[in-house]
Image (tube, rainbow, N blue to C red; front, side):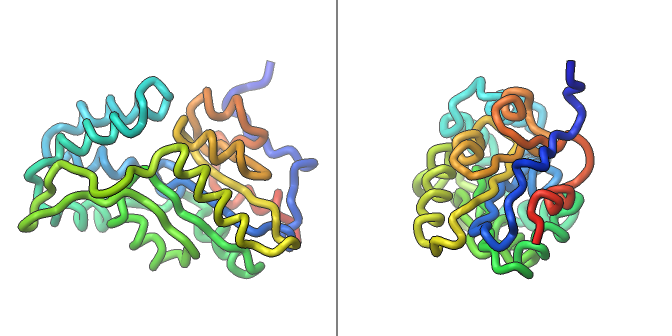
Length: 228
């Protein structure tokens, strides 16, 4: 029996970096170490409630869009300044993210940060790490307070998959391979649609369904699967 905590990095699944067109990844608990909505909820005194919903959604026990609406509703009335506090004091990039992004950029690979989280954080991650594309949800705001609503269509599992496939359709024939990285059930369609799906410190239901799993250590280990 294989130890579920072992990394699974099969060499035969490697993709030559010159053939990789798109490196896509989830944000919360993948590109970064936290779930942003849980940390925002901490300032509202409802972290335990919101974290429990987040955990159930990531295991696939709750429909993602409804779970997001329920969690965001708990934030109504909170000062928007809390977003800055979470970013500055609590958000930390995952180990190896900078190295993986540098490897991708140096070899002409497009990068996508796609999240069921929020644009406030994805935009700052884009500026910091140089993602080519970002997509996330927009929190409603009014007079410096969160409204408890999500503006526009929600980024869920089907939108993550759709975005990966639509971006791949714009790339040249020599760059038609993709890698996608995620940790939750809402990442699975994207991971399965990619040439190579990676479960990163993921829920069991996710790592059981994709070929590559990192259960220990950081994202830089994936560079071994993207040789020059």
